[in-house]
Length: 499
Image (cartoon, rainbow, N blue to C red; front, top):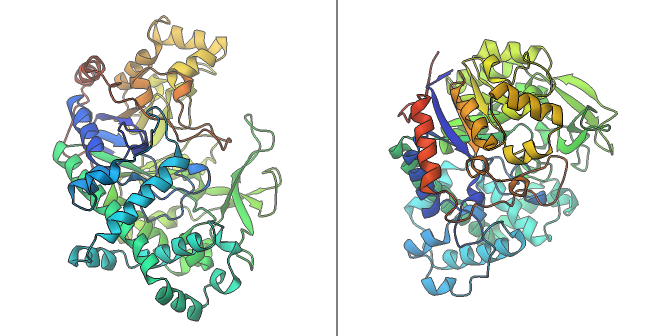
């Protein structure tokens, strides 16, 4: 897969500005796409778009297929006549600089329920239900049970529902049909609004980069409805769970809690679930970043009852076979591989064989010497380069807290002083050979650690940052436009093609 030389910005829709407490996929997102175009950028990278569960993380979603109802634009619902302007009269006093999920979620759910009461089922809705029949019925039933049982994980539901007794599920579908349809309606709204936004991006020549976490959340419709595809015990809890082993950053490693796949079961059905997952994602976005790509080569297997990731082992994943079957089903795939961290030597070999680009992060470049692969002069042409990602501190924050030797190396290597480090980093990435370059919106705004999106290993204070309404000034947009012109990164109608 080869991409056209271009650039973009990483920002999740939740971080976009607006008065409704959380960024959404309505008019403010369309304005954001217009701003990208004005800056000469051709890429918008988002995080996973699914409904969030534990700690509001987009990487712990209740579904690999569904959309997040919190992203639905209430302004668009007013435009569609599904809400009255008076329905917004009692909007809470939301903060502008971060998402208060505890207030946003019930407020928005109440408004979506009001829209549902005014909605008459029509052909468009029925067509949506037909198109999503492989996942929507299970997801909507799953969310109905979540409501019924106080949000508890599905492993704590009554055994007959936990274990999907066919007779009990059919009774539930009949008895809770109205509640189930409410969840289907919320998905209908999300996909309709996202479709409008995606069409606007295409019209403007902006490609959207989506994100797929390699593992599914334990408490998800994916695992509940497809237990045979995961390594679970009799009660549905993970028999083995995902994580990473102890390393320089953590003496006990990281324990993620996601159940591991039963890859033999996936092989037996031709990787059908994964094929549907990739296909569904590519209906929403143009390019897909796969998080923790190395897990397809080998992954850290930890017992399900472990409290740390120390006592684990490396187990081989499906490797090339997986991507061969995907390509047979879906054709040439526009995939970016997240290949950061310690890697098995087979990972870069697989990327080379598949022709997939990996990632380079400039913040990682200054802890060794000039052979560091994250230094711009070492970038291959076929890669995606970032100043940092959602898991990093902002560049300004990183520089303020980095060890003195790394700061000195960065200044010396880039030939700069400390007066404008963030934009010097952006320039260095943009001038590199990397075909695709991106920076988080926080870096364009030159913000410090207070604007960090996520701190890996922590479970509070993440995923909340929002940009203020007037933060992206004409001056910043002009700087970005000049940078794209100087480095020959211009907007284009088709950013990828067969190699």
